[in-house]
Image (cartoon, rainbow, N blue to C red):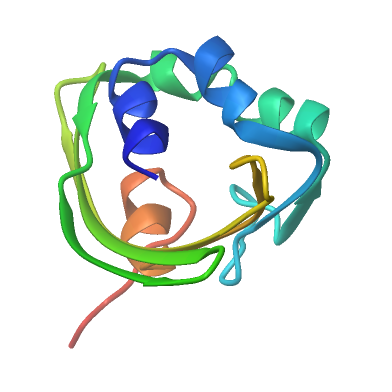
Length: 129
């Protein structure tokens, strides 16, 4: 899980995808048009993520808490991202990682505030009045 976030921060998607099992499942439980609810297989995960780092000048994901139970790890972390446009994008994440016996990710769930993401990327406008 630490390597997962470090490789994302380094924008090394080719190394990052090697952390995944071949038939892995990737879930965005609060999926939108931008984030499909379920991605199946290592190849599809790579296809979804391969161009994502190029949207950002930099990004970091400091971990604030983790919980472990057998092959499952839950992590809470912050996202502090600088878009190529110069705008900041910040969100809070809770992710569930399920690992194979060999340590590869076979199931990943990513929870974040979809309203924050949708506003930032022009998919929605919310009036908080």
